[in-house]
Length: 339
Image (cartoon, rainbow, N blue to C red; front, side):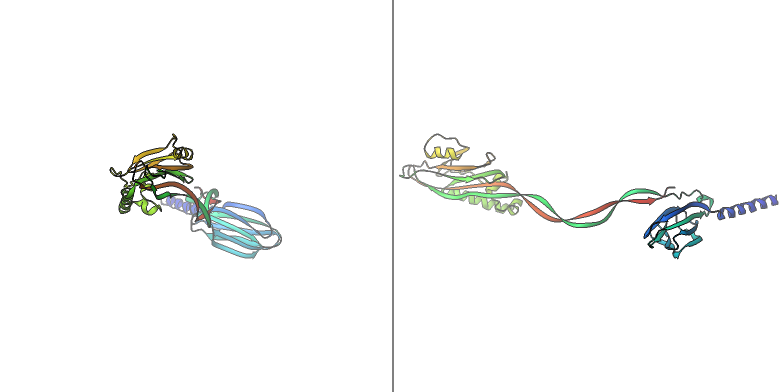
């Protein structure tokens, strides 16, 4: 019984020794290396493998450099100006990809033969897959500074009319009518007007302006020229109020053709109309062209001062440049192992 156990132990030891000393062929090739070029070969090796590497220059003489590297650049072995390397043994410390590089800086080609073998450290690594596979990955290789143009839309407030006019009384030898025009700017989205008679009408507008400033609304500081009429055009809080007592004025908002009819005392069409101490309104149509404010004083003896203000809100586009970084992305083939 003891003899049988001893035989088994010896056989196991010999088997392990034989196993550990038997090289496994990984790759063998004869290659032509063109002048001033390199030839690369990649394979996978297991931890604790003994790499056995041989090389022979069969045509063209010595080659400038032979390297064995742990991929991509960790050097394990380098030989210069050599024509032969015989069974170079290298211990592999990590599972990984290994690179064999042959560099020919000469002006003539070389023909070389090389072999790669491995001695596995144990039975567990005998079936280690040494084949290299590749996959495509994206890699950011740099960036460049460029200028990009962006289209910005600004909200623009335009005060088209801001005046105080005196209109004669009905029985005065001069006309008790007045008309003047305003032209809407391109890309108008809405506009508004204010009409107020005498000091009361003017004061009502000034009070609204003061209340708007005290409110410290966000648009007051963001949009230049933002006041009660701009707020009204934008459907905001204008703080404008209607007066109920005092001298009144009859007014119409109309176009050029009907303004002439108004001046000539003939029937005409209008967009807005009122007989008021003060009035204000927002208009969203029409939004292009020239229009008129027509005023008439029906007071027989007393002239009136009328405050007239017209404000339009339009959109204006402009190009703004700003620096941007453009990242340069390339695709490349990356080696990997499968086990």
